[in-house]
Image (cartoon, rainbow, N blue to C red):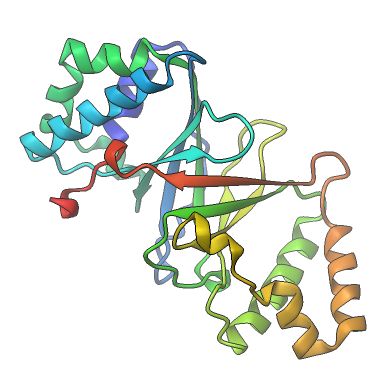
Length: 256
């Protein structure tokens, strides 16, 4: 959805300065995310959905090479959507997609998206492969967001925790992302835990705490959690979101 970012900047005065940050593409399996946080107008959710579905259909018909996924909030504000676009380097944003641009040039599609949208903000994040697992085939995610005061200590403790999870070959290891600098109240890091569907959230999982207690014993594991909690910001240090994939609203050439 990189072309969407360009169009949005010109059409809606929600300027988002692109941060100067090094890519993580030198690491195996590393990549970056552009995450567009959108709120649909309260009484226009269905119209907004229809607008993105029309865009997806048009891009498929025109053979667009762009790709993105769309996720809707399952808890909290249900008017919130996240459009997620994966990219390797900033150079990707200079690549034109004539097929996608032609779809945005359709008045019905343009109006269907923008006329039913209340707000749009964009953030960027890079994956941290050394901390992450290899999740596949999921349609529900928990986003664990962290604001950090003690960055070095946070990184050291998370690295140690994830190391124990990898040693245990834990099948539900989350993916971790470092958020590029943005607003004051934005997360500094987030971890993504994955579920095949909504019903899978009922599964009993060992979790990080269970893995640590098996590896270190209860006392040492609890102390590690306490030390890790001390690295977080005092106000709004942690919050969780649950998102559900909206396949009809997203687009990927490989889906055709």
